[in-house]
Image (cartoon, rainbow, N blue to C red; front, side, top):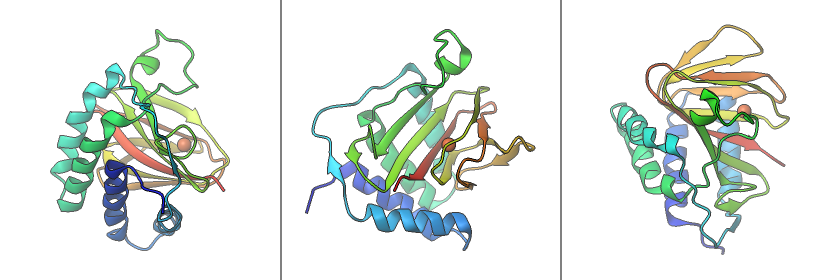
Length: 197
Ligand SMILES: [Fe+2]
């Protein structure tokens, strides 16, 4: 049995505990399928790939906001607190203008899957952070995706109207749908799973 990073293992377990509270829906079914796949650990990365960005200063505020939203989100926040400093945070490769508000105001990190703490063939499990009042522009990708919101923000799908999501809410992106997100006056923090098989 391959040993998984302890903080990652505990965060995955806390994420599953949130998923277990969700009502039956396509995104819960998607998360359940990801957790079955993640129950078999991938190959851990042995070197230090941590790469905190200036925008990570907003993470404590996000986690504080989520901690007030009931015990399962409080637990998820506590486990992310123990994990985030180990993660390989990077601005999206969609942002080439290093002076733009978007470039300076967001970062992503992969936990499992390519470029993360653990290679995994089925599930790319990652996180996105957006500083207050920043929009993460439209993007699309073939893998199906589910977001679990840690601190609130707005999402948009297929150029429709923006809709609000609070801590513990979800967003389900079917393959190749265009989607975007934006923060309000507080930072947006959300974890996502992509099915990469
Ligand atoms: Fe996405």
